[in-house]
Amino acid sequence: MSTSTLLQSLLRHKAWANEDLYAELAKLDATAHATERHAAIRVLNHVYVVDRIFAAHLSGTAHGYTTTNTTETPMLDALREAVAASDHWFCDYVGTLTPQALTEDIAFTFTDGTAARMSREEMLAHVATHGSYHRGAVGRILAQAGGPPLADLYTAYLHRSEPQRRERL
Image (cartoon, rainbow, N blue to C red):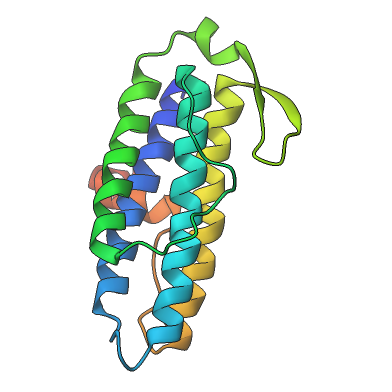
């Protein structure tokens, strides 16, 4: 599997896992579990903001964020829609890159003012792994509120999206 293909798969996995996670979070009773729901939305909003910051770095545009979260907590449905659009952007974007573009270094500044440089490939890998890390935290919040365990593992995604992988050779 080439790097580009692997990144495409990891970013599709991220989008797939986000769909499931947001669906489960929407089932969490907003009254009985208001604190847990708010905490989960804050974590997911952070992931969204960081995704948009890196999308701006990748596309050479300004992102307008001064921190890695927003002051206001968005409504779950609005965040869910924004995340789905963002995930779609990343899946499309990675498919446009040549091997040379993937290795291109991009200089940028973190929201804390620190200068940095990463390749496009490293930025995309960060987006995929950063989201995974925080989905785990939200999965823990959901489990503590009585929700089902999430099966958002990469292996689960591969076998659900490509059932033939379950066949013995």
